[in-house]
Length: 213
Image (tube, rainbow, N blue to C red):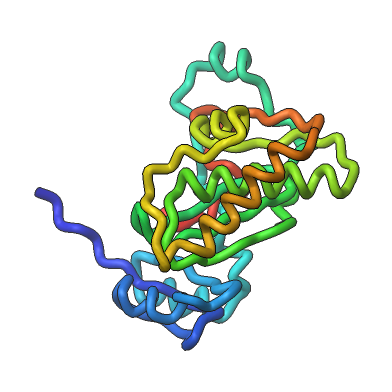
């Protein structure tokens, strides 16, 4: 059995900032802290160096990605449509601390972000990100398309429901309050935005990815 690699966590914004050598220590700094900024690194030195810079320089970065697909497959899929936004969620544990955001697909400029929330799932986050994106584009009267890498979230949006099996409790009430609002928005609003599946195998991680894998 391979030994789990040690991780170090840089916290740019939290109850306390700095480098922490365990997830539990990191979690204590970001829990209930709106707009927390953090990321894991494989060495203490890398985390310490990152802390000197800007958080947004370290998230959503595609490591030198090379697709395993054939040239014929890549040609068939084509390139992303950059007249678009991309959304994604991150969950540390499932359930666990969850957040989501939307970015400009080409520039990766962050357009909106929510969380971290104390308890949620990746699927819930992806669903909320899509609905937030739909509302954002409608509000700005935009004809851009929207990318997601979650088929589950796409299905939930089509059905105008959230089929999460996560039981409701006090910890996840803020998340489910957003879910209820999102479902109500879908049922009472019309939109023309096209939601498209991001082709991860061809293009790498979606631009809205938090880069914490």
